[in-house]
Length: 382
Ligand SMILES: Cc1ncc(COP(=O)(O)O)c(C=O)c1O
View 1 (tube, helix red, strand yellow):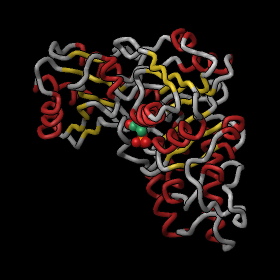
View 2 (view 1 turned 90 degrees about the vertical axis):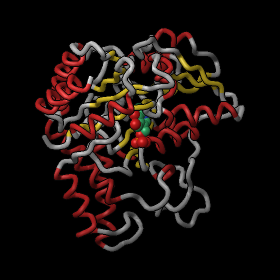
View 3 (view 1 turned 120 degrees about the vertical axis):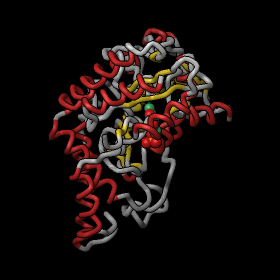
View 4 (view 1 turned 180 degrees about the vertical axis):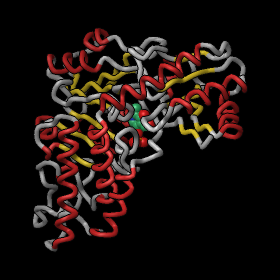
């Protein structure tokens, strides 16, 4: 058996051939900075960026492609959103299942005395009760931030309900789609999102160094840019341009990565997100059934695919999980991730802090024989 990659929640490893070709094509045939020169190859680089904006806008159902801003990854996007919109005295609501890319910027603003945060406690399977979100709203609440799905237990959040709550109460809604984009159909307008953050290198199939956000024009107008500099526009002006996307896109763009991201999203559209989801859920079902048959294993999280995506965290009795991950790799060439997964609050919520869990995250390129082989390996080790 070839190497088996079950760490898709960290990044998607086997990129589509078209993604690799697009990256190569950029350096072989374009190689110039977009929006910085009037010569043909620079214009072509600029067109590539615009086309990718268009592809992403269409993918998340965003009206105007100018609402799409590119960043290096979702961590940058979330920081730009959080630090750009929040001002002294603002109140924020989030959940205890969030990733450090949300927790840490919130923590630094809170410990500096700028904002107050309510972390709504999820249950021991990571599930959030949306009524608790509504109950936490006060007159100072400016922002609700939520992940679409937990990167630890795969638990799906009630994003539809929370989007309605935010909209009804005139509060901005920020969504972290790091885990779900590319597997679940995420609609910016239907979910009533104001700030949809995405990362390019996970299920969107793009290369590392890509990501960004879609932002409502209303929220964008109220945000301060975190990073200012050259945009290739209004260069006679000392101030940062105030229009989208330039307001938030300073410095030379990662055109190589963005062209790969375009091909990644086109790949998803070609296969069909429904088919991708069905494939992953089918493998998840087999894996879940197999895990349930191993007495030493405890599944952390909902353990049903209606309430979670096919990312599974486990503990295994007294067995050290770092050791288990090591043995899976060493003896069976199976790649997994043990530890806290950059989400300490989530592990506290799930009862797995500070030891953490062992995570298996399924991706589109995984196959049924790989899942069966992994279950077999677990049975042999435990
Ligand atoms: C839910 C969630 N949010 C944010 C991130 C951060 O992603 P990136 O490292 O691409 O910025 C991750 C990465 O694992 C994640 O799982």
